[in-house]
Amino acid sequence: AVLDNLSGGRMELGVGMGYAAHEFAAFGIPRAQRVSRTEEAVQVLRQAWSPEPVRFQGKRYAFEDVSVFPKPVQPGGIPLWMAAQSAAGAERAAAFGVNLLPQGTRSTTLDPWRAGLRARGRNPSEFRVGMIRSWLVSDDSERDWAVIKPSEVHRMARYDQWALEAGDDVTGFRDPDRIPQRWIIGNAAHCVAEISAFVAAYGITDLVSWASPPGLRPARMNASLEKFARQVMPKLKQLHPASA
Image (cartoon, rainbow, N blue to C red; front, top):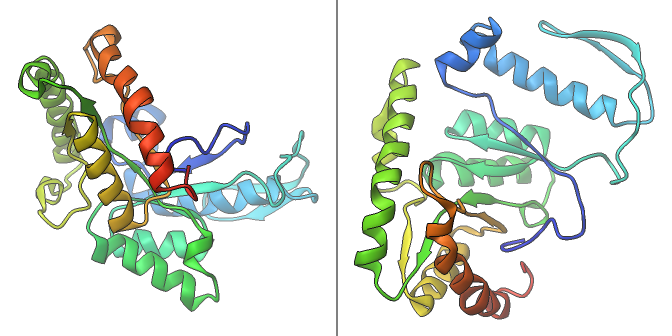
């Protein structure tokens, strides 16, 4: 849900191919194998969660009669999420029939994913769309953002560095058509309006926020978190009852 889809104790799993060169180097795995490893891993996981033993022969993984216990209590296994930054990634998520974490523009992520689901006879409204987006609930935005901004600048610089080291184009992060992940900053009424409009515009069902930026003492965010819980969250639940 927009605010708390895990309150019932459900386990869910996010799947991403990764991109940072140092992460692949740490495991001695070529980055070029990330697509095949991701696709095969999803197939193996779903077999592991089925009643039958895992029997799989692929380019990267091979198993024969491997029984995995305990089995998930959720019917059909643990719900899967897949991140996508391109039409190819969105099509992959649709082919596997998983929930989407779009990291690009609507035309290269959300639209191809929904079209891919429909082409396979599936209803996109039965799936979920998640996004990470931060907010600062403050009655003095200029004062409070000045405290947070250095940490956020540092975080984004590291993402740029990792992308460049991997040979990726970082200009996409600044594409004006990209589904926005910039901070929402303002008083409670402003945050309610902005979050509500964002959810409606993109069909967001699951919205996640950074509780505290890296390097910043968590206590510096306490006031914002309290305002969000007391003044913003109740309003969002009223506006989006089906997602709350």
